[in-house]
Image (cartoon, rainbow, N blue to C red):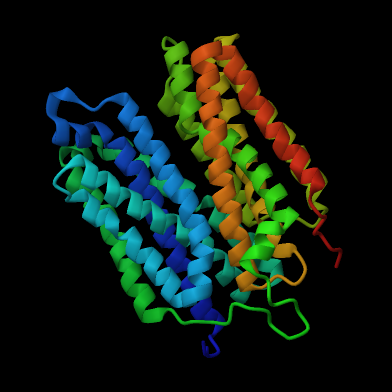
Length: 405
């Protein structure tokens, strides 16, 4: 494949196009979940849908995202970054197709295709960062990558808080409006994107980092295991844990307030991180922030379940969300700081990392659900807080990537 020199401005435009596309994916995903009752009512009327089917659909879509991340690296190596991302954004545009499907199962299949595209886009942001962003700015751009899903979820949450009745009036129109943004990013990518060399920058570097090498790379697996444990703390605090607390303590707790607290804290943490360079060793810094994030989440749950102080709990959840995102970008930036990193290596690494991470997260989430159903509330909470300890342990096994200037 022949490539031409691309200006840094063009490269950054490509990054922001992918970033907006992924934010759109998050908004479409969360929007579809928020409109779930309206979707089910359209296709099933008053009968509803069996909860078992809903859970099966959720796990199936998660598996599709796992496959997408493994697939993303192979597609990039085969097609190059321009066509690979073009395919990913085209799949994302199935959000529009899903909104107008004639039955529930076609709707779910189209949403799965959309999820494939969204997950691939997340992987493709990394080689663009490696190629066009200087080392001292990589943490800044990694912060945007980590915040992208949260930004999309927050925008939809605010929209539903302000215009819930209007957005629920016709769910097809609402989801079509979000999907239209995906179509715009597809057109922008077609017009502006260029291919660039995804191998090493010189013959002195190890440019032939293959898929097989990535699968055998112990760093990839240690990083992914830690990442999955981290996502249990983060993702469950935005969906499973709020619903569980609302079910157990309905008289004093509102699930939506916890979601806003954690996501709002996350956005604040991201904004502060954008202005805060980390000129210190990564490992002790991440361990310290990890301990504080776990402790504040635990104290928040204790404030609800034991002390019955919901306002204190929401404040602690905000602090935990802040701490989670304040460290998220630093952790995700560690692969970028490894020696001899190049776009192809970044793509292969992150494709496998995200795939393994989603797979392990799904398994851990299933175990949590089984514990909650069979062993009760407190047993599930003990498991919820033991898993993030694995994140702290995995950090200690990673190489220290900070280099004093």
